[in-house]
Structures are given as structure tokens and as C-alpha cells.
Image (cartoon, rainbow, N blue to C red; front, side):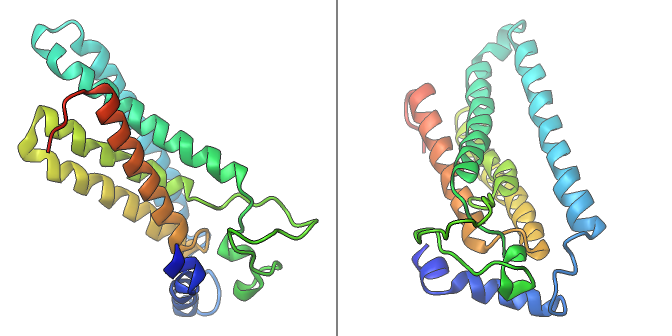
Length: 206
């Protein structure tokens, strides 16, 4: 946060993207970033969560499946809690998206996270990044797989980081978020994944 918001790292990244897109957010309404990755990505993540939830219910009827049922429940709860936590903070903290700022063709001057917001400013909710959290929440696959299939745990972490990274990159290309917004979501998702594993799965695993 110090490097990105305090020392201008957010602006360095956003300025570069903005310039590469021709001095405008050319990909803001593009079919790939908006329709496929943003809208379609949300539907894919929701479908994945629902399929896992149905599978977890089904495992309750299978004797061999009961051993993984608890870790699966913790995984599902962790993903849901991560997305919910990010959304709650996002709508509680007024923070502008890059596309709303004068620097990037919008109408508002920049107000930092820890600065007093001027009276009359709209309550824009852009911090932390909710869409990225729908991907980063799946870093909870790491503690899940560490318990049920340890050799695959690194792939679980990679899946969560890759999906969240894809969502984050698309939103930054659209001008919807600064890099610090997305990394804050990642930190929150990691914290929830670790906390849920320790609280509800018991014995620590590597």
C-alpha cells in the first residue's frame, strides 16, 4: 500500500495502461474484458461453487466421501466469506475507480484511501476489488488440497492466483481498478483461507 498508493505505484501502472490504450480506456466496454472475463467470469465462478456444493451434499451419502466432506465445506465457506468480506469493505469505503478521475478522462480529483473525502463527492465503491476477489477466493484450494491431496496443493494455489490475476488484469485494463485494489483483495482472501483452515479443519498442515 505504501509503494502503490503512497509513492505513486498505482498511477505508474494505470498511466502505462491508459497510454497503451491511446489515452482512453479503450477496453472498458470491450467484449473480451467486459462480456467474457467480467460478466462471464462471474457466472463461471458461481457455477463452480454451486457444483462443488452439490457434490459436497452428495458425498454425505458415500462412506469414502465423508473424509473429504468437512474440508470441502470449509473450502466453500472460505470462498463465500472472502467474497463477502471484500464486498462489505468495498461498499463501506468510498473510493473512486480510475475511470472516474480527471487524470483518466473522468470528472473527479484523486482522493487517497486515508484522505478526507470532500463533501458532495459521490460514494463510489471501488476498493478493494470485488471482481478479483471472486477469483482470488479460490486460493483456499491450497489448504483444501493440502489436506485431501497434498501433491496437488501447489496447483490449487496456482488456480486461485491465476483466476484472480485474470480478473484483476481485465478490470485494470478497463480502468475499473488500481493495482492496489486488486492486491488488497488477494491479501484479504489469503487471510480468510488461512483463518478458516486453522479454525475449522484443526491440525495444521504444511
